[in-house]
Image 1 (cartoon, rainbow, N blue to C red):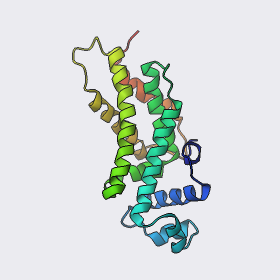
Image 2: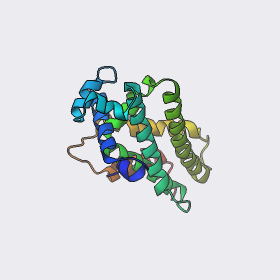
Image 3: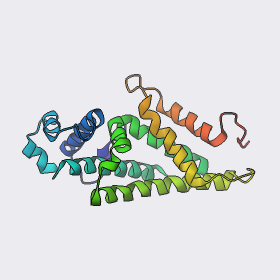
Image 4: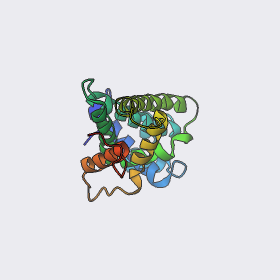
Length: 206
């Protein structure tokens, strides 16, 4: 399991617990309906105690998203190696994303559906991290196309391919059964093969 503690510096267990509680309630109830009082009660804190960690409800949403995207980006960066062939880095990108979010499904829902609730500096700072993660992913996709797309009649747009990929892997929150714990490695491999070679396998390189 990937956790915030393993890949984010300068955090503590209690702070991560509060973020996890907030992510769960916001994912379940929506940002507008999830109250500071309910989050504090669920985290076994007074409202004053919660405000020790966060200055406002929007700051809490910001911290959940900042921590999530930073942890996701850092976990991928730590696992990538320059010597990996492009296709192996592509498979790792998918596996890392799915491993992280199947372990942090509430955070995925918050990041997917509540991002636009952030305003001002909160929005801008999270956007920087999101763009950096996209930059890494796009670079991996572009390298795969550069190495394996020479025989194609029309070269696909690498940025659109990257966005298609995120559309697929982020949709896992709609169907993944956290109780049955389907093998994430199998899912990651199937998605990678489908994107790389198509369901008919016509693009596969021998």
